[in-house]
Amino acid sequence: MDLIVEVKRHAYDDLAVLEDIALHLRAGEIVSVIGPSGCGKSTLLGIVGGILKATDGRVFMEGEPPADCLNPLTYIFQDFALLPWRTVEQNVALPLEHHDLSAAERRRRVADALQRTNLAEFAAALPKQLSGGMRQRVGIARALVVRPAVLLMDEPLSALDAQTRDLLMEDFLRLWLRERIAALYVTHNLAEALKLADRIVVLSRRPGRVKEIMTVPMPQRERAGKAAQAELAELGDRLWSLLRDEAERADREVIDG
Amino acid sequence: MAEISTSGARAPALRREVVFRGGGFAPEARPLYSWVAFIALLAVWQAAISVGWLNPLFLPSPASILTALWRLFASGEIWQHLSASLMRIGLGWLIGTALGLLLGLAMGLLSAFRAVGLPFVSALYPIPKIALLPLLILWLGIGESPKVATIAAGVLFPTVIATFSGVDAVPRNLIRMAQSFNLPTAGIITKIVLPAALPGILAGFRISIATALLLVVAAEMIGAQFGVGAFLLTAGNLMQTDDLMAGVVILSVLGLGLGAILTLVERTFLRWR
Image (tube, rainbow over all chains, first blue to last red; front, side, top):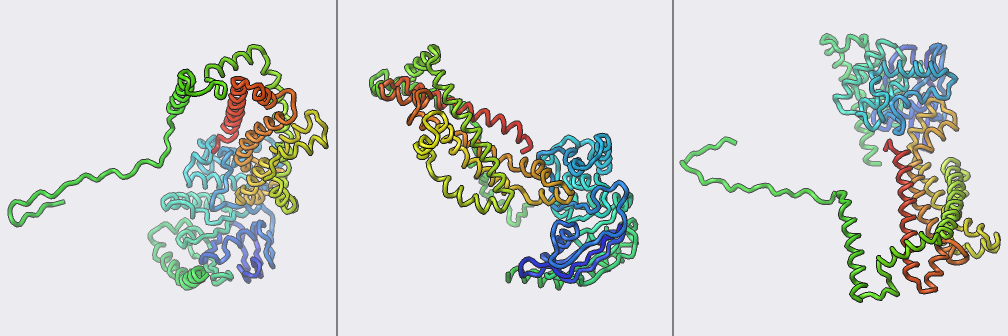
């Protein structure tokens, strides 16, 4: 299933946040959206996922989602958005509870999602008993349980410490290489975008416009190798040069406020 | 640190221990202290009466209060008062709580209810509900209804406010998460909003139970034959201060008991906190 985003304008009252955004996310592709603070990255993801209504714009799903998909566009949240009164297993089961599934099918899906995220032995734990990294795994398991066509990831690693971030990034990569679920991945972090994305969309400062769409010309599995480092570093420099001026101006705008 | 000596012996440097500056400002549980203080207070009180510093007519000794309690329970006299009060508290609290939960939930969830309800609640909450009793007697007659209605009115407002505030404070990211999985509205209310608002609602129950206890005594003092409030008033009028203090002790124990039940409910339903 492809995802087509056409947002001509989005504003909060008179404050324009996004303008002239046109994106096409193809099945199985990871597109990362980067940009300075306040450029509307998370807003864009909200519009794509249907939890924010664009002032002027629409999002289309083209083609059929996987046969067993219960929620084609599925979020993974920055702050995990777990229910603290539910166990890991109950949190993962939440998206299935309003679907007409047999109890056996529900159990099978939950067990499968827990297995794929290495959470099986923590099924009975409460979120407060888990580390940040483990909580985000629960968020990922909850997303996988509905067999999504597109994952909408809103800075999923930004609330974690650097080591946990690296470990979880490796997990994401393994998961994606295995399942090839398309993803729209919003991040501040250029290194994350370079490790994960097929294409990187650079947004300008507010109102966010597409400044450039950069293709990362090597498969994800090769990016950890030494041979790829020079090329990735060059891409990183180019990305930073695109972003630096925007980030500086955005920073001044916030201070001038 | 390496020592470098250039001119023979060096005077030993002054060595001072770093003084601990932290500590304090961290409450510690000392359950024994409260028992010791309580027993000490009773002992001083008893001694003050035994040596004639206090007049037992105005403040009876702990021993005579205990004797009065024993007599009231053994004769069964207190039961008809206690049962009448408990019935009024139970009924008034249940009615006030049910209405308060419904209104608070509606105000928390629906903008129209919030716009209409908030000014009303703000205006009516500060009124001492016992002031409404004469009006309620006019409306409902002189039976149980006005007393129960007074308690219900007293319970209603803290429950509305606690429920509304609890619902209002539900993290919006949890609701958006549920919406992103297409949970139906009823599912969002039962699976997200109510559990998330429960700590606030239960905190409101603590206030509403204390309010119900206060109002039942006041209402029974104004117009009731039976009830702890009526018993206290009669004992006061007859200068039976040992019975009066026994009634106060019963109210205190009742308050503690209801609080303990609520603590149990909190521990059961809020284990996740």
